[in-house]
Structure formats: C-alpha cells, structure tokens
Image (cartoon, rainbow, N blue to C red; front, top):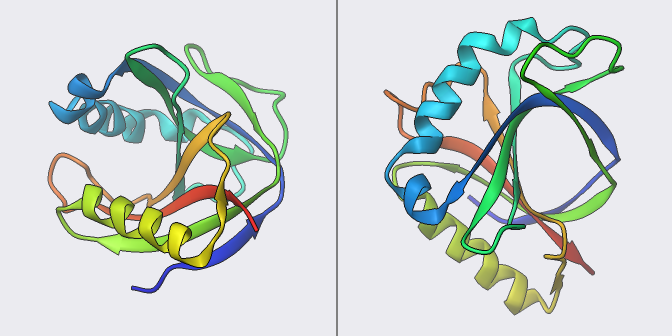
Length: 153
C-alpha cells in the first residue's frame, strides 16, 4: 500500500481515554481497551460515521502516552458517562492503509517515506491518528487501519 498526503479538516469527537506506558501498550492493554470501546460506542449519539473508529495518540506523558478511541460527532450535546469530548484541529497527514500483524513496520515505513519526501513532522500535540473499521475486533483480528502522521509540507 502506498503512502500519500491527506488533508483533514478540524473535527469534534467523543470517546474514552487510556493513559499508560509503551510497555503496557505492547502487552496488549490497548487491544483490551479497544475491545471494551466497541461494546460502548453505540452510546455515542450524533456520530457522523459510527463505523469509523478513531484512535488519537498524544505522547504527552513522561514515560508513555494518552490514547483516545472515539467517534467523530456532529455536536457534543450528549456525552456518555466516563467519556470525553475531544477537539482535533485541521492537519495535513502522511497516510498509509495497513492490514497485517506488524503495525510497527508500517509506522516505520511511513516515517521513512516522510523523511524521503522532505516533509517535516509535526509532533508537538497529536502524534498519530488511526482509523479502524467498526467491524475490527482487536482481540481476534489482524490489525486493519489507516495510519495518519501530522506533517508540514
């Protein structure tokens, strides 16, 4: 699958938050977190595309990161209990669609592509945006996602 540049407008989302270390993520905590979100995503009202799950990664802690699983929403009048409202500004992204078991290799390939093209990474807020199909079950299925990394052209 070929990397490309994609522009996304600012959007609002509602979802759940996980904070942890890279080691916890590597042990599968995010897979469990994702699975639990699938069971609750229907509680989010006014979702624009209920079958497009967003993973938002912010590397904003000393030894780990904050990760949201969310749905883009039209408005935020109704936020389910234990969920949060997230605002994502407009970005230009380096993007890659991926399906397989070696997601880290897809990320490496995308970062290499960004460098080869001479683009500048924007890593001061949102580190990655991932998009998963609503049918993806992280406890059973091989990863299937679109990876987006913020860049400046």
